[in-house]
Image (cartoon, rainbow, N blue to C red; front, top):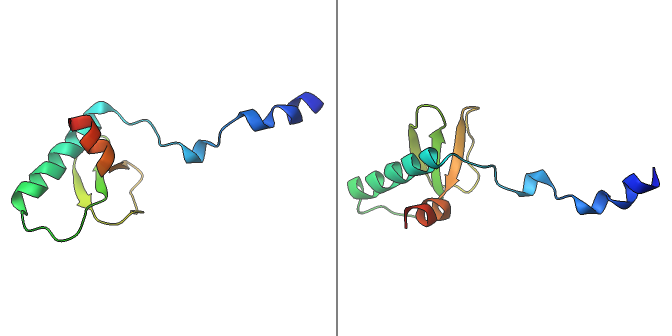
Length: 86
């Protein structure tokens, strides 16, 4: 019992770490984002990322920091899209 209490501080909280996302989903999110930028060059506001379906790779550009997602969707932040594309 004492050993269990002693090692409790060694584990990180899983909620603080972003979930792993497939590279194909990130690539599709980047295509959605860059297509949106080309179609809407006069875009007002800074997007925060892309909400994308993990299976069908359909998504949309999101402008809020905490989007509400459907169960099969994930949120790819803009900084993750840009770091993957460059």
